[in-house]
Length: 223
Image (cartoon, rainbow, N blue to C red; front, side):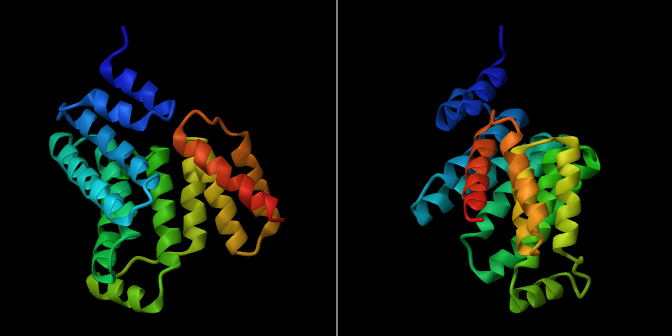
């Protein structure tokens, strides 16, 4: 008989996000909390109202942080905190955005310290590098101040390296699509097309994969 986590994972893979979250109910174990937090991030992605989206993400961040307390040796808990904080970054002002940027890197690096072969964490770190690279000069200066002048170097090259690591450890449509977007930004069209096309060849067994493939098709259609 399938465990409740296996049943919830199956619901999630079918795109039944809220049903998956509800199935875990009031379970406050680390395994339940990080799942509910991560899936809530996907629910937020589908929510158009900014205030409601932020509300969902604040709760997801809270559950993710609690999962770290209850599962301090589980890489999934730290990775989920990084994901929730990354989603929140899109909705907050510069002061909090800068604070979150520092925290995201710390949490995802802790996840990789626990499990260096975790493709999901390499993906998150790649997205961190890509996101910081796009930040404006004022925000980057604020990050330098927060790091006391020792802000770690971020670049599209580093983002590519991390996403390729993600692809090595966990071949998936999302990392391929993100690699295509970064290569496109770098005006390397052949590499961009190749990775976007590869995204479409990957399994589409998770909601995040299906969304990535939709974006890959849209980007390819513009060439």
